[in-house]
Amino acid sequence: MDYVESLLADNEEIVIRTRRHWIVLARSFLLNAFWLIALIVIAVVVTMATGPLGIAAALLTIFPIGAFLHRYLDWWNEEYIVTNRRVIQSEGIINKHVIDSSLEKVNDVVLYQSFIGRMLGFGDIEILTASEIGVNRLHQITDPVRFKTEMLNQKQALGMEGSVSLGPHPQDIPGLIAALDALRQRGILTEAEFQQKKNELLSRM
Image (spheres, rainbow, N blue to C red):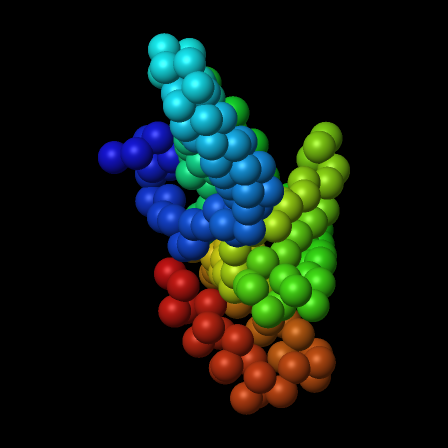
């Protein structure tokens, strides 16, 4: 069980999980690759000229390698997750930072996707919520269209589940049937409408 799964409540399931697109690593990769190649060239030249100093120059190559490795681990540990109850943003290699927004508090979801983003499959998702945070923006995530769709689907399913749970209590049903019968006697409801609603109420007992 990974860290995020340990945060899930009972009957909570992960619907989709993604992270930022690999393109966010491109700048770090190119910059550190440049320094790595430059240090290797310097090490070779210095080794040919002075010998021992070349070894010291070669050891410096560990810095661009380490810098990119750290950036990669940051990227790998930053996840965006939709469950059947909330949206979770988790980041951090050792020290974890988790932000979650209940789907019930999500008011709107805005998708920003450039032409290049559509070609490569990345974009920004802006989640507008009723919480104190207000706006939560997920930058350059992979497959943002699917992420947004799943989020809205789960919000709708959660709303339908909540509406079902708000049905009448079984003890109230006889009183509701009596009230419907009174409406039928006054001619507000037809016999067919009364029988239909009566059957619906009796099926909930």
